[in-house]
Amino acid sequence: MSDPSARLDGVRSLVEVMDRLRSPGGCPWDARQTHRSLVEYLVEEAYETVEAIELEDRAGLREELGDLLLQVVFHARIAEEDPDDPWDLDDVARGIAEKLVRRHPHVFAGDTVDSAEQVERRWHERKAEEKGRSSVTDGIPESLPALLWAGKLLARSEGLDAEIPRAAEGEALVAGMADEDELGELLLGAVAAARSRGWDAESAVRQAARRHRERIRGIEGR
Image (cartoon, rainbow, N blue to C red; front, side, top):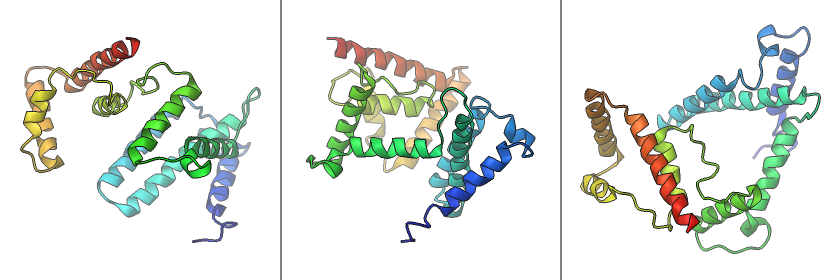
């Protein structure tokens, strides 16, 4: 492992470069960016990082993580300039470090857990308490891709017995499959069939996920 005192030298260099770009005499393009104007780049870099992971491209992953880190540093630098509520990259890092300690009492506070599933469940419970959320579905961004959003809704609602109307049909379809590749081909075929009918598969899944979210909240309300 590298020397702890030198481990963040690269991060410090990146912060210095960003300071130079945003300061008078720096780059006009970088200087005019805002949190909102950078959203498209943040999303793009996140998806490119996912692609590198899925392709098992280690060199590409290293580069894409750098691009993603740039977005974090960029946003933190913009926030540092706010006249009313400034904060910087160190505040961001300190905040997430404190959150990790708070959300891992089994590591830092002598709590005990029996499984990784219990860790995840307690994480979401503490998160809901901290943010004052009343539903397990709160805080899942609806702007996520439809399949990812649906998966998170299902994961968060395990144990609530929320009915999935066509779950038996779905189980029957995948019962004989050997791996995720076959599942992917089935989903691609479903998208193709939807397109031939003029249907939007992404929208269809999103609408089904919304309906399931309401079923979950109905159960919680009872």
